[in-house]
Amino acid sequence: MKTIEVDGIKVRIQIWDTAGQERYQTITKQYYRRAQGIFLVYDISSERSYQHIVKWASDVDEYAPDGVQKILIGNKADEEHKRQVPKEQGLQLAREYGMDFYETSACSNLNIKESFTRLTELVLQAHRKELDELRGPPRAPTLARLEEDEQQPLGSEDTPKTCWC
Ligand SMILES: Nc1nc2c(ncn2[C@@H]2O[C@H](COP(=O)(O)OP(=O)(O)OP(=O)(O)O)[C@@H](O)[C@H]2O)c(=O)[nH]1
Image (cartoon, rainbow, N blue to C red; front, side, top):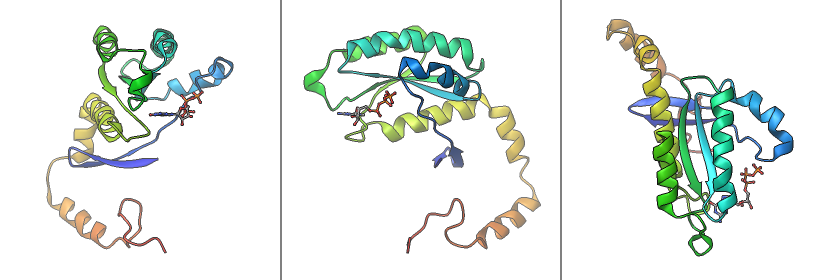
């Protein structure tokens, strides 16, 4: 679980890292059904992992809900010396699928926040109508709610902690 702020809205996202290995695929497919956003990730130092994206994308088409948002990721961008997949090749595939594309590095923290924020933005946009209903028209009760929120103790769900002891 992670809370991020997008467009002034605090969004709590639940992240599942599915197993890549073939033997877990029966389980993996179960997770697609409730997904709202999906990262398709390959390793820039492995042409083979890039080739697998076609299979992942077709599984997502088959098992994920229709409106699911997808982003293509080329991870391990810190391993430039081992690169087998040119950035242009990743971009090209993303264009074909109509997806955004990021090269990331979990090691150097490159584009991690950016890609999660973007995927969340896309999910929010896709659910804009429900979101507007949630926000509701601006009216007095909102003020009352704000006052209530201010009284929440430090360390409650979305309040950043200043001390963990
Ligand atoms: N250099 C580098 N190594 C990475 C990066 N991200 C992950 N790794 C390494 O790659 C290996 C595999 O990482 P995992 O997170 O297990 O990859 P995965 O795709 O979830 O693997 P599966 O569980 O088989 O699906 C580990 O040794 C990680 O430390 C990265 O951005 N850069």
